[in-house]
Length: 157
Image (cartoon, rainbow, N blue to C red):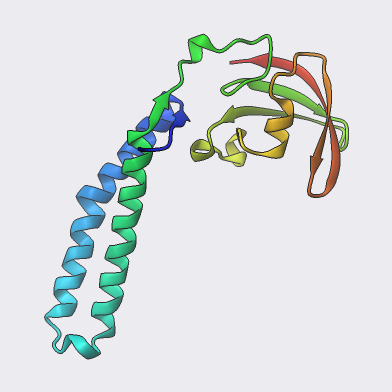
């Protein structure tokens, strides 16, 4: 049975599009590279053939992983997100008292995390420490660099 992965509709659609690209573009390209290398002669001493086969195996493994993720995906409905306390899909505005800076994150699944876009994985120590807290709460979070103190300024979707 596939592991359950909670995703936003947007994250699910992006993963599905990436999978389709691998199936329709990358898979045929890998097969063509193998055929081209095979045409070059003796397969026992053909490093290009071995490399093409290995690349194809890696691609097939990525495709299988994505298929498993999509099979176990559960789409989270943003309309059901409660803004009284922090949970997955919450957009939170925090004051980082350690750095003196205000930060904003959206808590998402591991598959959708992208810190540059402000999407923090629900599995990170910071996200885990914030879960269940309310606006106005101050939370001390243990991270590899030490302890960080956050104050919850706002929770939205």
